[in-house]
Length: 236
Image (cartoon, rainbow, N blue to C red):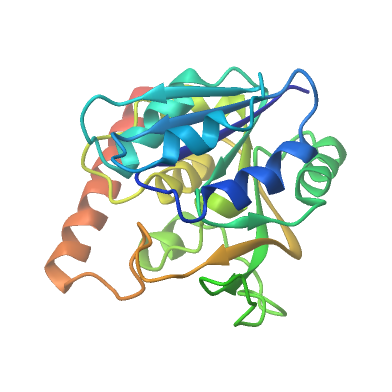
């Protein structure tokens, strides 16, 4: 199965080299690494190009479009049967791809796979226990509308669900929860209880550590419910 790794990055020079180096050895010759550069002003592009790897395809946004629409563009560019999402500042465990493919191959009905993760600091030191550990991952729509457990950088999915996810609605809060929620209506989720992702927190992440204000959270949930309702009605 051809793999597409999709990354969106803006001004990622501090960490992107280490992340790309953790991913490329896990890909086959016919796989692809689609990187959307969201109008970076630093040396991000030069670092990516320094790998001189034909599997890397850089698509540049002329203007800053934000993380959701940049990931949406990456998904539209992807051609693989299995699609991984990745941030520019994390690190993949060396067996991440193999573990995910093992799950997909063993369970043809599973369309989205999530793995556990640990948090690392800016220097790459592990600073947390596994996020889920002995706790169960819950993929249900209602539960994740209330409190999202999906994390794009710890996800992969079959190409088939893109027919329902794309184009990404402009008003959703983030792409990963949308993909996870849509999958609840069209597929099945699987979970790998191993921390295959080292998720870096460094103070400049696209996803904030603190909750958004209450009214913003209400607006986001309304947007998700509205778009899910439209999706459901279209499927009827």
